[in-house]
Length: 222
Image (cartoon, rainbow, N blue to C red; front, side, top):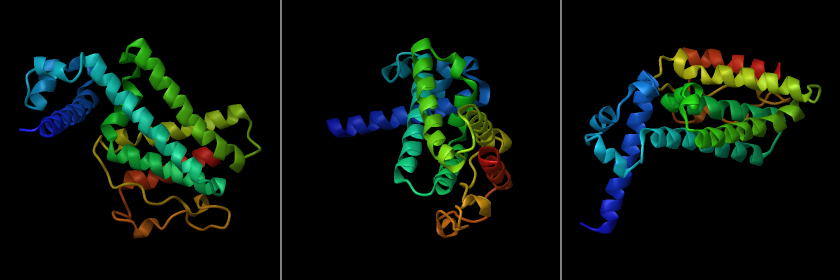
């Protein structure tokens, strides 16, 4: 048994614990889930959990900091690709919808359990969330230069409210990723920002996604 094998096994158990914890916290609420139940979900004793995380609070912080960092990184990468602002906004909406439908548990936790975090972790997550919102603000300002700062913030908050409602509207289960937005969302020339229909898993998607995508676009851009 090599050190590499042991490290891999430990990493796999840690990842399984994070996934199971996210699901249990999302389904039942952070406060209602015990360390014993977390351990049982991944086939380990409650005390064994402390080999991976010092506390249940630290486990929640790991989940919420991680989702916030990944959303920020994804949003910043899309903005860095540049292009017409309408197309950048389209990609941002699709990215967030894809994330919400593929990882509904963590989106539900981010929406509901932020007050459960310890102050330091809470501050870090809120900072990451503000930076993520800011990554959307630049392309929105270019697309709608007639909107002032406050008006853009209202539109952004309404849009995130719709996008983050996806796991609740879909019953908390993963859905087919979003593949299209209304024709008006594809830039001034009406061209699609990506060949979504040709992507694996492309197509109609769920009814919930088909409804929320155009609603989010209208909330964002008017």
